[in-house]
Image (cartoon, rainbow, N blue to C red):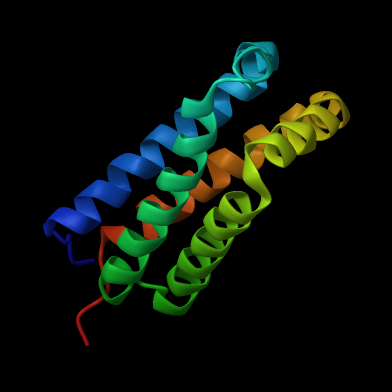
Length: 135
């Protein structure tokens, strides 16, 4: 196995670790994250961060896809991230708040699923950006 040392690969390995820790946090104490989101719904910064983070993440994923073991999967994640950012942008903050107000109570009993998905995606990012086998 070849270890890749380019900055984008390192960034996504670190981001993968953050996703694993977030997933574990949700598994251990889902109220911590869910209550924080519910308490900050009216905050415009949360709405803007949801858009900017997804858009920038999507751009970075596109830029780094060629360094991944699974470039097609990374490009799909990039596209989904950018499309979600655009969806949030065009729906507006009020509809964003309404959406989360409806979804959060329904998701709370299944928070453990979110935790597993987050940790799994984090592990996938670490694995795919560790490096490709020499061709």
